[in-house]
Image: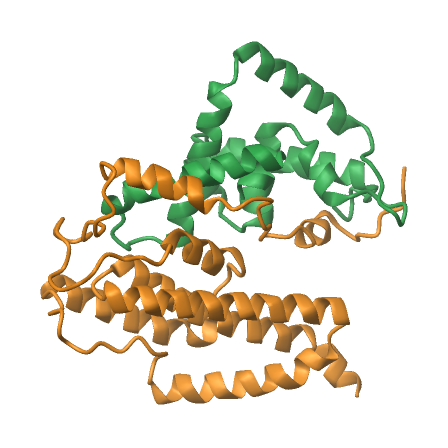
Length: 146
Length: 200
């Protein structure tokens, strides 16, 4: 999940390490009331968000603008000439990518995703729509079928 | 615009791998950090329930985060068929643990649920799985078998860890999740090969 959220293997590995350490610290608060996977996913999301916050604001804004631009153009193609899904996913703006990863890939509800990301449920739905639209464009999928 | 090999965005997202192996071993750094958290001591981890290590129980030496990563990283959905049995058993075990601590000399079984309905369903599913997995494309079959091996390895690691820390609700829940994941894997193979069976 860290890899899908960050799009950068080295950063994702750092986040995964931090996630396990945070999970160890937070173990006393885990009472088994929720799914362990949901609990761990929440910690992973918090770790990635905290890592993003540590980046300088200007660098973050610049990166998001570049991501927005990148997401507008078709992505790289694989050996068969079709667009690589993971590359397309990595090119999504962070806000849309987060929701696509949590809801579209890991199957969380919008309420769960919104709670993990600290956003409104409506925002989660809007970001998913935006993310799916950008993915469809990059992957050459007809919007009617998207 | 390129012609996509996917019919929909959902198809495309379905193709994204959920479990990705890291390029390096993440455990040494995690272990170092955890040792630092414990003041440099390699003692027993704190008992989650009352803040003390259980009597007569040695420190958990199995790197449970690895077991956790392995057990969680493979399959996320739970098969409805066995969920209720496993869930019921998990709740009962956790309730029993909450009401009275398990004495260190009490023999505890961490085998799969012994419920007859579960055993019958599990055996039938496993038999179907063995037949159907042969119908999968070689690459898919290899991936499925690798996933199954990972689940079983995680189960084995967790049973070892539980033998040392039988009161841990976390380890118990993880152990149960491996049974669920194994059943889920059987179910998904059976479902995905159903159209092939109808054709023959």
